[in-house]
Image: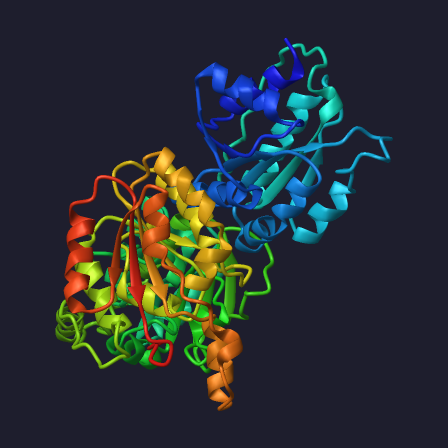
Length: 539
């Protein structure tokens, strides 16, 4: 057996049932062996960045480690932004990356790949030899899973045909956590005992079935409303006192309840400035933060009390202690039911369309109408742009794993690649990509052929205002000419139709109905080109 065959078998043993990539001379034989093994699916992408982004999307929607492969040199530099996105987002990912032969100084694609990877924030694991290859790859998978980060596994091209003796794969060990310390739990219970309006907040770190059940039980015990960060949206779907998202996307009733709270129990949430509204929601309050690990992040706020331990176990321990101490419920939910029902009723109603320029539609009611046409169970992938908060607000998901977040690094153009990964990872619900025209063009329209070839259930909603939105806002806010922020109008509907998409151009309410019909009757990828007025974007 040769090394490239052994690596392919090792990927299968590590559970890599989906491999995203773009082949070159350093990885093509490994990919060929992976395909021949027949135990996994290889999704060929047209650009290295999108291969890595697809693995990121896969990791987010499945909750497992994404796997991608590219060749060396420019292939790696093409993928640096995607690696930075994964590093900033704590996404577990293994990228099998080729490397040139050491000492070949005149190789056109020779580059110090370790330094390139270091700049992205990803981890780097060198494949030292054919004898240690499996040991090295095992280490890459352990680092990715336990540190929740992207790992570049560096494979020299000159080793691929070396002899290889099969060795046992070391599976990634499961980490078992204990609840937080007893003293910390007593302190948290003491804070709750004197609280009159407690609030339970859950972040992406609390999105397991066990944690959900434990947090709901605790909320009912102390009679507190429930809220989530954006990335945990939908965790408490169906619960009577679910406030939805805490932060800039909160509805009026949630804002009122959060503002009135006097003690916040935050589980698995970093308490970033977006969740706390620049600390406006936490200032002057007791805040108990429960985290599953000690990983530092610049997004961490400073709570009154920080506990580290298993989320579900800690929540259950707090509940048990309150029971032993016979602490009564707070009554904080007594006046919420009617208000939350009114919020739900208002959201179910499509707002009136405001006047916009000829050939365009008002974004909010258009998105709300599309929301009604889409299946309730769907994955939302929102690219970055001035439309994004409106998309998150008007196209909500019903479970955290159905929100794929693409904005960790602040780059536009990452949504399409991640949507490819999502749409090829799941088969029971569609993937909805919302992108601006600038980001959609930047992401590489050629990648749409991947969605068509893979028969992905992908619905693209293109917020097409003919501009780079953030720059347009900067110019107009200063009463300057926004011409430099404008993009020449592209007929995306015609372009994407040639690539195999069903397309609808929305320029008025009538064509919006046609878009809804196309979504409901789709048999393959669909693009909705939503023409918007750049001067009237409601953020």
